[in-house]
Each structure stands twice: as structure tokens, then as C-alpha cells.
Length: 142
Image (cartoon, rainbow, N blue to C red; front, side, top):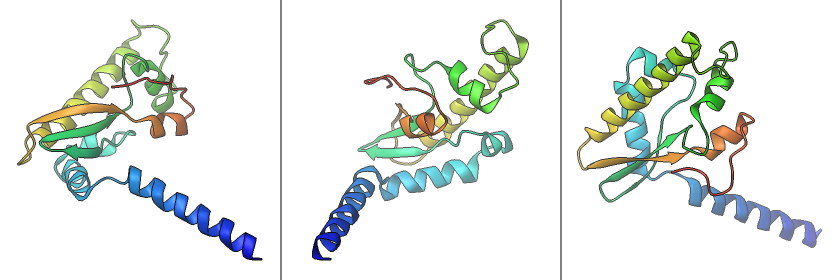
């Protein structure tokens, strides 16, 4: 019984440590709330919810589902399964890419306008991608 209690305590401590390491700071949570409050209807309804992962000094790191290592086509295939992402000239695919760029740009502008923020950097949202079945190469992402 003591061994079980010790193992349970270690697991709880590891979960707490993981949460502490990953938990966004209060400034990041505030900026994420601002995105949700000030975003357009399109931003609010978009299947990927942009959020601030952390703030370091005057730099906000915002999650993104795309990078040179994880092309937007993979993410678009998940959120718009009806779109032919294998044909770069497919009008629906082109429209989905433009929509993603516009929504991401809007989230960036909202964060960049906030007091104390001088720049926005993108950080690949590995958790979202892997939870949606998208393989992320080791070392991938901004």
C-alpha cells in the first residue's frame, strides 16, 4: 500500500510539474482572452483557436498550426476534409489557405496592438497538430 501511495504521489508531482512548465503565464492568458474578445466572427469561429503560449519581455509567442516543416495543407485537410489539398490550384484549397492567412494575420494584429507587446513570434502548436493526427518532425517549427 505504501508503494502504491508513493507511486501515486510521484505521478501527481510529475503532472503538476508538466502543467507548470506548459501553463501559460497570466499575461499569455490575458492576451489569449483579448484575441477571443476582439476577434472577428470569422476568427472566433475558425476551427484552430489562436492563443498566446507565452510572453517573454515584449515578445508574445502565438501558437500556429503551420511552419515550413508542417505545411498548411496538412492542417487544412483536417479542418476542411472536403478540400482537395493535393491540388495546389484547387480553388477551394486556395481559398482555405487565404482564409488561414487572414485569420492568422488578424490574431497577430490583435496581439501586436496590446500594450507592452512589440513583436509577435510564431511557435508551432505541436499539441494541436498531434492531437489531430498530424505527424510533426522532431525539431520542426518556429
